[in-house]
Image: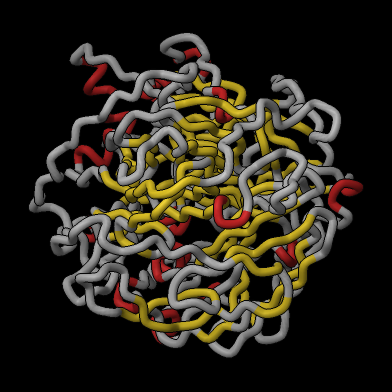
Amino acid sequence: MNANLPRRGFLLGALGILGLGVTATAGADPVPLPPPPIPIPPLPPPPLTPLNYHSPPLQPFVDVLPIPETVPAAGELAATADVHRYHRDLPETRSWGFSRPVLGPNLEAWRDRVARIAFPQRLGEHVLASHVDVTMHGVTDLDRTDPRFTVHLHGGANAPDADGHPLIGWRNGGRPSFTYTNRQEAATLWYHDHAMGITRLNIQAGLAGMYYVRDEFDTGAADNPLGLPSGEFEIPLIVQDRTFNPDGSIQPMVGVYIPEGYNQSGQLGDVACVNGMVWPWLGVRRTLYRFRLLNGSNSRPYIFEFSNGMPFFAIGGDLGLLDAPVPTTSIRVSPGERVDLLVDFSGLPDGTAVELINTALNDLGNTIFMVPELRNIMRFTVSGPGPPAIVPPVLRGYDGLPEALEPIYSPESVRVMTLMGLNDDSRSAAVFPTMMSLNNLPFLSSDIDMARAGTTERWDIVNCTPFDHPIHIHLARMRVISRQPILTFAYWLANYPPAFGIRWAPPADAHALGPEQLPPPWELGWKDTVECPTDTITRVLVRWPSVEELGFDPDAAIPVPAGAEAIAPSGTHGADHLSGHEDIRGYVWHCHNLDHADHDMMQQVRVTTD
């Protein structure tokens, strides 16, 4: 097989010859309320496979859920090293966080109020030093002892020099400082490291936190006009799967057959951490709760359900509220996505224990590599009365509420973007020589996408790989138009890919296997991250904000601040491209499977004003 052919295309070609069908789904559809609770039978724990690392046996639901404090988005928030115990039965281990042992506080900002935050770098040696991959762009042995670091406000519409561009980083003693304009409506954003080539490791070590944008409707106060739960009844849930070593440290490797120190193209753990704790429990009262839920995992998507089958409501997604609460018994969330949920515990008697579980199955690629599935997430234990549980009937489109969402449409301007899996010729066959690519291009390609501020496009994102990919576009806002399964083998056979480094993005409409599928109701709002299932065209509306909306030039050159270090924006692999002399402009778009983004599923995009 030619090294430049997508591996998924080859596999599906074989399946096609055998006459086997291939389908893709985007998660379960919402159902009307109230359905009768249908308990979900427990599944046996996944088998210990010989191909994978495994955590030591850990008892679920013995540690209380930590709830990060909410603090104003202002001042100084240091990235620091500390020690943290992820589970009662694990030893303490070295960890990273933002002024906390692991993760960071919930930063609270207000619409149209500027927030200036400095992030002093005091990380010391890398928590996962032995796993730093020096074959990645700009990565050197120095990143083991004095790692680079930056901060990206995921979902924020910020100037290029405040976006946390992965080409610019700070080592120990550095002090990045960013200005966030918050010119956007209330939403659940998050902040995390975005240093080139080591993002997957820096976030696993603990560098992530929530960022709430408030406005006059969603104030966070008890008397907020939307009637949403607040205070102790508004709780962040950062879900991250992890694997642990017996000494309590994180084991970032999945396959035992991959040498230590190499990006393995995906990280799926065998236990779930919520807010930095393994399988925690939370005591709740008999009332309505609002959960701001982030999939902060490197690679794993989830379908969240409750173990007793009880329904809940989706009220928002990445970039704000829906028009009305959407009742459902399950919701799919891919890495980087956020969902805003209302859960009513008022009908459950005291002493009831109900688990939040994951019913997502592995995609084809991870099934082949025998990656364990992950069932339990956390437990809720009901005790005591609470305020009346009132679900607001509407969230937009009426007096005293935000404007209704615009109808979704398909713009005339269309781009085709391909998601590909390739062999990496720079690695030997003994070192798992795969990588992921956008449009058949390396990240530091000179073939850069160009967009215009104030315009709206349609992106047809064609996934040719055996893995689902969550695609995140910096600065832009997205709405899901549709998804349509395709026969990938026929697609690439009809449009034979050129050598790696030459753009390859032919339309795939002629190879559709069925009609377009509309997104589920809970996915109809504005988004910054969209899941693109395997063997599927995912069509999204992409809105680039105007200069008037932004208040800055999105194509301004990014100066390299004093104390920072830059990687040249053109070239291939290696530290020989470290430089501060070339202009860095624009933003990036990438897969939010962080192992994919590090190698090589990320592209630059410039947003011009002319």
